[in-house]
Image (tube, rainbow, N blue to C red; front, top):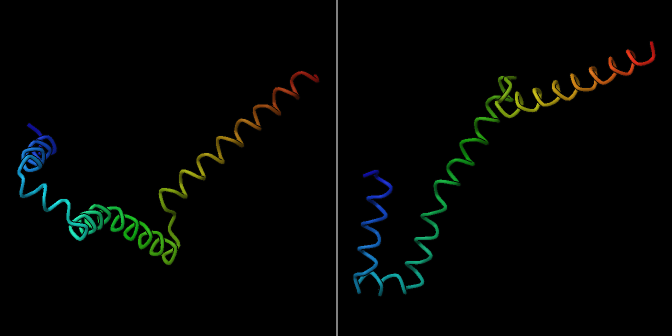
Length: 91
């Protein structure tokens, strides 16, 4: 069984416990749980921002920059192909 499934199973078992149910009714606990669930996203966003800043400082292209460039190149290639086809029709 995967870790995720095992954790879900344990969580569901815990939710059946009246002590846990009472604890989950506490607004402070719910606020803390909400904050805890936001931490991974905030850490990822912070890490990505720092990586972009470092790449910028070192004048390196990021993966996002490369994807943008690839899209631009493909768009230009389609445009060139379209122009070649138009020239072929005129001749």
